[in-house]
Length: 235
Image 1 (spheres, rainbow, N blue to C red):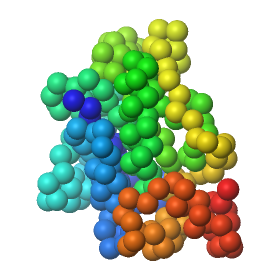
Image 2 (image 1 turned 180 degrees about the vertical axis):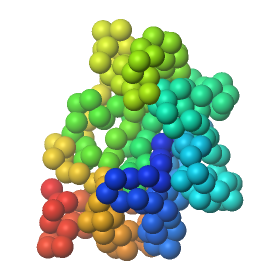
Image 3 (image 1 turned 90 degrees about the horizontal axis):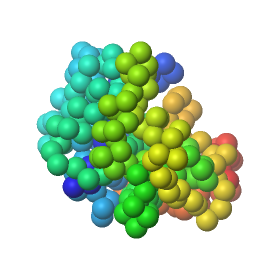
């Protein structure tokens, strides 16, 4: 089974509650769920969040929509991630996606998963060698590599360091494959971290979502061309 884990919290220094902020009438987190579900390679999606009361509204909403949610202690990032994977059942690969990414592209998810499968890499991503806009990151890791790295994570840093971070730095031990865009777009940042970022996301969704809920990276690039209000996010 190929498991996708979407990691999200309601707390945010610059934009608290952004996960539940509306995009085209639905919370941003739900728009992400919709887009990830369009992937052809994902077997199961779990949204991982904390057990803190601040994340209760997020978890309640997702469960009411039939979305599987895993809640863990907020103090230990490594443990929370691994327990989420273990609770999902037998898994061969884990796909990690972050919760500030309303433009996550199903086609890029599938391209990265297929790269991992075809190369048999322990870790495949478009993150280590960046060429895609920030906010389109996809990381694919084998369950075996993930378990090995988690077992060796230093307890003193486990609260803030995930097994994936360790795997990224040990390419000699965990063979990597890198998904690259046709051109370098790494200077672009489409993550939602500020009110201005969310206004950009809302503008893009207003322009594209009705015609195609699974709009692609290239569609976002097209919509930013010639629009002065979106020039900050244009290639």
